[in-house]
Length: 124
Image (cartoon, rainbow, N blue to C red; front, side, top):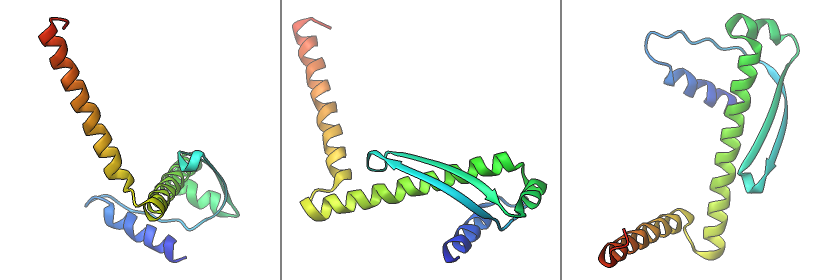
């Protein structure tokens, strides 16, 4: 319940001034699939109980379920990615983000050097 309240508070805080914010408390069934170490996350949500009419008064149920599915998938992917990076760092001492940045810089430098070499040889 604490996470739901925090999500609700965050949603309300992020609403632009002048926009109306409405809330509907619902129970859902969630099917969650996580594959490839969190790179692929699938969700299927169904609103259960008597909340369908309450939700439909605010937003079409189909739209609400799509948004909830996407929000859950994004959050799960974020949490798994953070956990995986922290696990790698703890086990190997390698910061994944820094390693990725260094690899990107090295690739860019190699491309620049190759372009310079081609230009000097008249191959460009």
